[in-house]
Every structure is written in structure tokens, then in C-alpha cells.
Image (cartoon, rainbow, N blue to C red; front, side, top):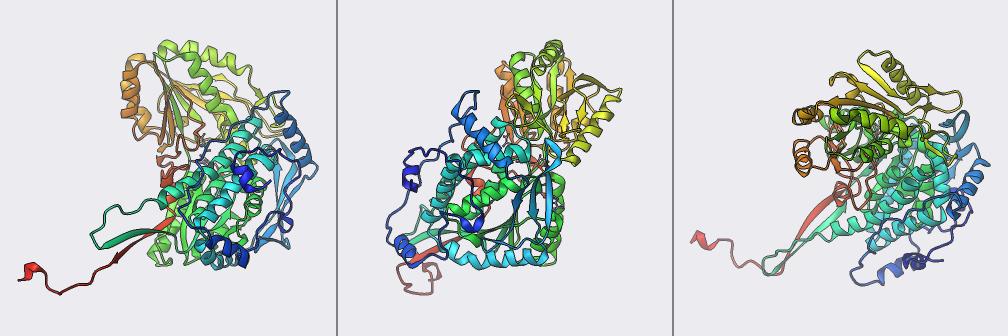
Length: 588
Ligand SMILES: NC(=O)c1ccc[n+]([C@@H]2O[C@H](COP(=O)([O-])OP(=O)(O)OC[C@H]3O[C@@H](n4cnc5c(N)ncnc54)[C@H](O)[C@@H]3O)[C@@H](O)[C@H]2O)c1
Ligand SMILES: N[C@@H](CCC=O)C(=O)O
């Protein structure tokens, strides 16, 4: 089955063959392009329109569905290869592995999930130089061909490798089937398809006015040096996206994924090679985050950072880059693009449908153990509805199973690692003893086998409790019950608290005036604000994603705006006439 069959929408039957190791990739194109490939590119004349992007239809993994069967097979096949190996890669080929680091299963903390090769300073410098060397050929590659690689990758993600990517995401990151589906299958494919159309949209932005006898163009150049992408553990799609926007626009990228997502990221890297990405255009490096970053941030040709992770890490990067700029270390002022932490809120109005608000809150706070930057971790409930809210949420939570990702009944999985478990369990232990907090539900943790935290809700007696400001990144929700008449004043408090973050927020109400009031007063409290809907679950192409204040640079993942940050536009003007004289008529 070729690319065009896939693009025409004919479904490939997912095969259960696993992704081959890097040197044995079947579909990899040779690079630089051979004579034939070059000629084929040049023979194409016309303005190419990329296919209209669409959201990958979700599969639902119901008990007797074929997709559940395929996923089970993929999980057991992956398990036969444990511990999974992630080699170091040079020039797109597996290199001799110098040292190995290990990561454990979040659901089984005594078993190694994957081993990965760590790069030393010299390896990172070589990776940067190799990327820079590959840059000219890549940026000269017609957009049609760059786009085709990502469209092909979207097909590989959503079909041939769907279940393998999901299995890696489930075992490595502790996601259940649905969470893996919306991340590693759907969102990743969506990013690739939509980014192609965003890039096309940018390229089509051209001057519309010209003097007679002149023409103008905008040359949407890639940035001049290299982009350094650093991705978090919690979404396989985020790493895949951080690299794809810059690459599509002709940039070269050095990618350092999270160690806690290392294997799924490796699969993404290999899929891109199989889809035809020239090997050196993307450098996949693993190892000590600070050491790798030190080399990248010392390089004169660092042109941008594309970061997703915690605000504190980003603050450190920002500071180091600012120092470098002051010292004239860089040729450019490096672009800083970051999506970071949140302390996201649900605001329940007295007119809200409480049962609906309860269900959305459980999904927003406890799906994937609260490890989404968008997870709801603070909620404000009107006094008149508090009893109903708490009793319904307790009843609903009694049906929520906490357990390993491979158990299809599990709703809340483990948290990612020992550090996360220690941080969250300490906070719970302290909260359980805190006279200002009433435990509504949960409050237990257990790391005997995996890193499990029970979905936990506290009702705070005061609005100034520190839990309203601290991002725990776990399944812990703090509530405040407000007097119904104090809704307006509460809006001011919600805006001010939340640790300075401003990522996502939601109001549940059936009063249009209250909804508009909240939208207006909370204008800067969230980059994504939803009505009668949970704070999580932005869909690419529908809700571009990101927040300002301490939640990032708000360039919005899933938008042309984000891609724009990785271009250095050049303005071109051409005159077709000659000058008759130096002096202007007004000089007479
Ligand atoms: N806003 C968003 O879109 C978004 C999306 C996902 C996650 N997040 C945030 O990410 C965090 C969770 O992810 P995480 O635990 O992987 O975050 P993290 O900040 O610990 O790590 C993110 C990345 O930075 C690297 N890193 C860590 N320390 C570094 C250092 N000193 N120098 C350079 N790189 C360093 C890590 O290895 C990883 O690749 C949460 O705060 C969450 O809110 C935000
Ligand atoms: N975009 C995702 C969150 C990504 C961060 O972890 C959502 O909308 O839930």
C-alpha cells in the first residue's frame, strides 16, 4: 500500500509487525536525494494544496472490539521485549551504546521498562553539527516533499504502528487504553496532519498590495540555526509535535525527550525516519537533561527552544538564555516557546447541572492520575449545592478503579515515578493532618507494586490555603465552598490564586449572564476556558492549547501561531522600472 492509497483514505489493516530497529528501516528514503528523487521533485509544477486535515477518528476498545484484541496483542508483544532498548543514534543509524540508564514501569516499580543510551557532551556537539550540516538540503527540499513526510507519518501513526505506540505509552507512561488512544494515536496523527495545513497557511500569507511595476513576496525562511526541543513525560504526542512544526518549516531539530517517555519517543523518531525524514535533520538525544542542555545552550547557532514541561525548569532555561544573550553568545536572539504548568480550576455556579459538573470534574481531576497540565486541581462550589456535589462525587468515585494500565477497568493509573509519588504522597500526608482541610474522599497512597495515589478531594475551610497554588501533578483536588451570594467576589480570588499559573479553567452554569461575567472577569486566568465542560481534552484543530502568565509563552500548540515562531520571514521586493532622476518633484 502506497502513500496515495493511504491519502485517499483507504484503510490499511494494522499489521502486528513491530517497528524495526533504526538501520533496518524498510521505508527509509536515501538522503541526500538521489538523482531520480531530485528530478521527480523538480518536474512538479503548480501550487500544491495539502489535503484538508481531519481529526483521527477514535477507536473505543469496548470489551469484544477488534481494536481491543489488537491492543492486547501489542501489549503482550511489547512485554516479550522488556526491558526495551533505546540505542544512541548517529547519522540516523544506531551507534555503539556507551552507557545505559534505566526507567521503571510506573505500575511495577521493581521492573525495568526500558534502558537507554545516554549521550555525553561530545555526542551532543556532534549531533548539533550533524543537524546543521543537514540543514541546507532540508530547507531546500520543496514543501510538498516535507509535508508528504508528515502526512505519511500520520498514516503510520494511526494505522501500522497505532497499537505499538499505544502499548509503549500504556506501559511506559502508565496510561490506560483510552488515554493512550487520545494521545499516542489520535493527537499525534492530528498534530502531523494539522501542522501541514498550518505551514501551508503561513506560506500562503503573501503581500496583497504592490505599487504598479513592482512585486513583493514573503520568504518564510526557517530559523538560521537549530531548534532545541525538550519534551515532557506525559504525552507522546507533545514530543512528536514539538519537533514537527519546526521541521515542517525547514528547521533542523535536536530533540531531548523526557526519560520517562523515552521508548515511545524513540518509536516516534523511527516512524518519522520510515516516513522519509532525512536522518540528520532530527537528532534524537537522551541522557542527563542539564548536561545536554548545557551543550545546546552554549552553541552560537541555537535559534530556538521549544519546551513543554514544568514552569520552574523553563524559568531556568529562560535565565540561562538571557545570560547568553547578554554575553552575545548567540547569533540570534533565540526564540523561547514554552507550554508549562497549571493549577486549573472548575467554577460551579448555583445554576449548574451538578451531576454534569461532578462527572466532568472526575474526568478532569483523576483521569491519567491528574498528570495532565490541564487537569483540574481546584474547584469552587456554591454552598447551596455543596452537599449534592460531594455526595454525588463520592458515589461516582466509588465506581472508579485505580489500577495498572493494562487492566481495561482501570480509570486512574499510577503516577509516573518515585519522585512524583514522594511529592504527592507527602502532600497528602500533610493534608490529612491539616486542620484547615476536610478529607472528602481518598487520602491514601501505595507504592508496594506501582506508584498509586488514590483520587483525593479536600474541602478547604479557608480560601488562602497553599493547596490552591501548588501544582502537585497528581490526582488531588482541593475544593472551596463559597456563599452563593459571593460569586462576583470569588471571581477576583480565582483570578489571583492558582500559583500564578493560567492554563485552563471552566465554568459550570446555566445562567448566560454568569457565564459571560466569568468569561470577562477571568479573561487572563486561563488560556483555555471552557463552559459546561472539563478543563482537559483540547482537540487539535478545534481548541488550540496553551496559557500565559506562569503557564508558558501561550503560542498555542495546534495552531499556525505556534509554527510561526519557527520562521524568520524575509521580505522581498522587485522593481520592474528604472529611476528617471534622483530628485523628487517636490525638490523643484
Ligand atoms: N502546558 C502544557 O502544554 C504542558 C503539557 C504537558 C506537561 N506540562 C507540564 O509539564 C510538567 C510535567 O512534565 P515533566 O515532569 O516531564 O516536566 P519537567 O519539567 O520535569 O521535564 C520536562 C523536560 O525537561 C527536562 N528537564 C528537566 N530538568 C531540566 C533542566 N534542568 N534543564 C533542561 N531540561 C530539563 C526533562 O528531562 C524533560 O525532558 C507539569 O508541570 C505539566 O504541567 C505542560
Ligand atoms: N492538551 C491536553 C493537555 C496536555 C498537557 O498535559 C489537554 O487539553 O488536556
